[in-house]
Image (cartoon, rainbow, N blue to C red):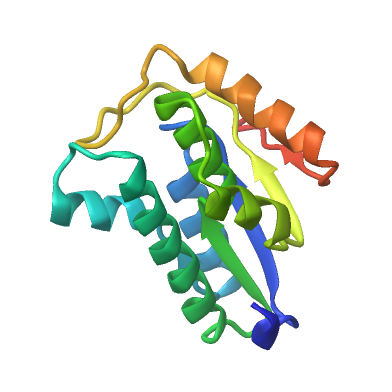
Length: 159
């Protein structure tokens, strides 16, 4: 990540179906900068919707590699549609544990701005979405993880 340290990385995070992709695309388009899509979608399209904890490690490695690759295309900003916090919460919520690789990435990867999206827009179903009834609980987990980390973040309002 050091090779592109002059690039401002903006992490957009939060539960499923809260508008992360739409916001990342819109901000990137407005700034004429790249955005990093959620690698999990590509991975699950290729490998199917049945996954295990080990698959999250492959997804994490793919996500971070894609982020670092696209940072090389950015001029000033890179908009990240998901990141290590999504993988941390996903692993803990689904499997009751977070692999050390993902935990370390959450602790060490640097984002200049973190935007947390609340579940205040209607759920949109998707082929790999799993938690339509748990978004409020998941949002609280995201917010608590951010508070516990001491990282500065803002909660985005869709209004």
